[in-house]
Length: 386
Ligand code: GLA
Image (cartoon, rainbow, N blue to C red; front, side, top):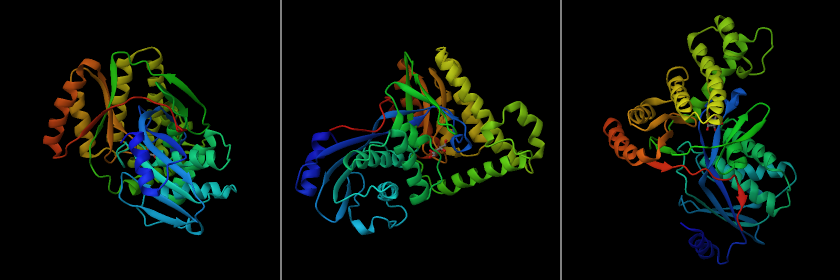
């Protein structure tokens, strides 16, 4: 749906035109998975697609939520904004953000809202962080918050942790809020020190492929991995020297891993520690225009997520394995939390059509699912459009 059609939809729903329009992207992570909540390195970029939010302030004592993607339309009285809606309701994302603002003394008044996303929901491209940030920027701009983007990023993560109840790290909200067109963000997640790295992919495209596998159990498995990492850290941290697994380099790990009480914890920790090194190497490879090496590191990341971290599953593995077979693919891996969702591949321009034509049917033959493909266009972070 284009913006003109969206505005017409808003007027049809609410009887008046919107007074402002906001946009927040989705994100794709190139490398550095399950490192963010371990204080490590990630390398994501914002996409040119994401979530639009059209809005009008009203004199009503209600906030009206509508979405073009999901048929659900709800009106919530101002005094009920702090009550969580039934578990899977998408309005919990904006409600969580509204609660964060309320905690710092910024309360919303009556609003008519229309959300419209053009990223697939729940596919590992951060549709939820996108809804959170677009809501944060809207409240900040319309209710005089004057908060810097980094603050909105942190509040959006808190909304997801505290209100929605998913214990995610900061990568998604950071990428969605701070993204820059044609750049990836090299971010260290404990200090939040970051740099914008130009994506010089001359002759290549970033291709995203959606497994279209439903991500059942993903949240509980995600939280389970987090606790395994905490346990591994605790067992290795006898002298109390480390704040996170990311403070341990591979050489040190080799000296102390015998402290771990079981083999599963060893593999979880080894993934985090080797993945951090792969991200650093990938940033270097990109700065030297060594795309072949970047691709190898992406492949290594997938193998580690499959064997050591065990978050891929047969669909993601099939999609990646089929991508690896195609001439002109220099790297392919799962992206996001895993257990379904998307893969990211770097593919030679001239090989993209063949990639889609070959990988699609081969994946379908193996899994019975039809994948979707998107060419990633790397865009800017969350902002007001009008
Ligand atoms: C999800 C979470 C992120 C991050 C990734 C895995 O996208 O929201 O915080 O942990 O999984 O890298």
